[in-house]
Image 1 (cartoon, rainbow, N blue to C red):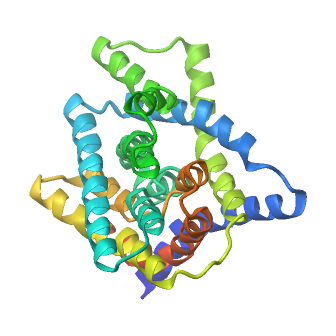
Image 2 (image 1 turned 135 degrees about the horizontal axis):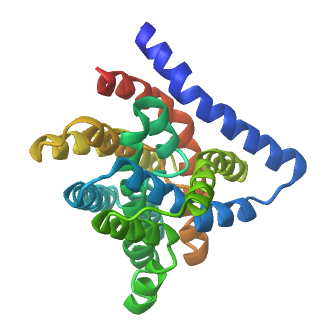
Length: 303
């Protein structure tokens, strides 16, 4: 019991306290989360990814392994959710919303800080690769599912090049291969910007949760919560055991798999009008429930 309490107090509670600050700022001062989101997405995140990969000197195999496993996990979770949703005879638009909410996890705002607090910078480096792949999948597979054919493949592919963190991975890969290092002034600037990523992500998480609302759909919400918080980490356990993942990579992979629904899914839902109120509620409920599943998971992964 002490382990559970300590894991919650030391790793999860700080996240919710900072997110609560963002929630209150949004509620009382009416601050728009979009500006913080744009700065974090376009500046802080790519710097964070670049610093984590280069400073921890991850090899080519480690980079590819994490990104491929993340893609496999997301596709498997989405496929299982689709089949169960069809069996439950969910209405078409609601089914699409459920699949998206179950597939895509909050690997950035929630997953990165929790990985850092629980397992340190090396695990965070692996988690950052998971985060990048989840973004790639959201802007490709997620867009295709949300639009269900109304969006062209070309537009989906173009959207991938709008994810700055991808360039962070690419540049880090080049620097590692050529054994380059940034000039000191640039290195210090990039490091400072990367340090701002985690706090801004947590503030943004709270600000975005302030927009959530309850709208029913108990069966659909139960399916999303079960797939996102229980089935996904179990699948990650299986994949990591099957392919022999060890140490910080395994910890990061399983923990990221267990994250609640990504806030980014609300953007897809709004853009393509696929039950945005439901997806916003799914983000809120899975986030609030997640400590119940994440706390024992942290204890297990720390053992």
